[in-house]
Length: 107
Image (cartoon, rainbow, N blue to C red):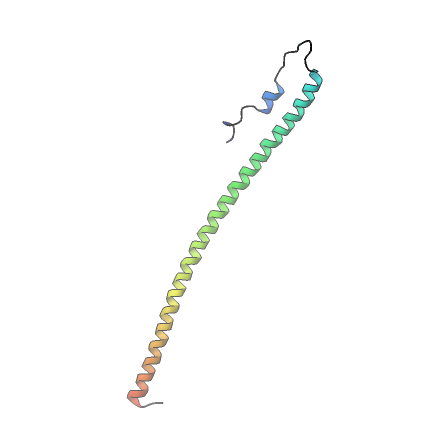
């Protein structure tokens, strides 16, 4: 995933040879430092893999939650429409009852 953006691998760092000059660095110090760099580099790669996995899981969960929200909104719209119809039905029943009272003289 990130390999096309990262130039060095931990193996490249480990196998790097420096030319020794008469007044150059101490090879042991350079090796110790590069060992630390390799360890940190490997840890960074592991962290990136963990975060990529976590990101993938979160994106999947997010997609599922969005789907659930769409379904719930659809159900809410259906319920709202039915409540409107139920209210209209109740109003019609009241009107019929009033008309029956008027027509048949029932109270």
